[in-house]
Length: 132
Image (cartoon, rainbow, N blue to C red; front, top):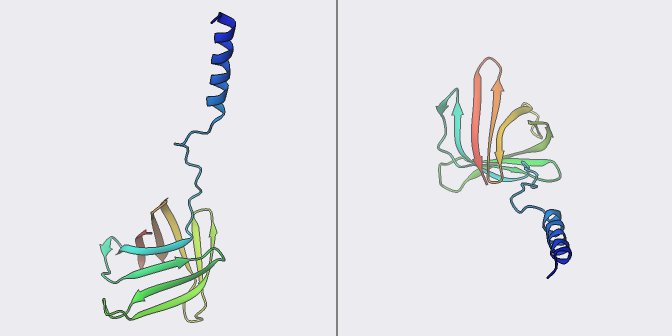
């Protein structure tokens, strides 16, 4: 094979592989949408719950927070509302007029885990570690 043909084959090969995307690129946009289980809740650094807690955030900006009211007996209670994300701030507006609007700061999010924190003025910080 002569040098010009070899050069042309190498050039075509190089252009072909350089135009392909890298499978290691992380093009997945991380999202809070989905069902989340609270693995751990901390109030001012102290673990505060052994309940089963589930957080559901839907694509139509609705939410439902479920919690186990009888510690494993299968009786769940839920609160519904709407949610909005602005940067790393998640605002929950509950349908129940007796519930305050809650604001969470998402401090870490991965495809299968998330950490958020909420400041309760004059009382302290709630930190929840969630998994899908």
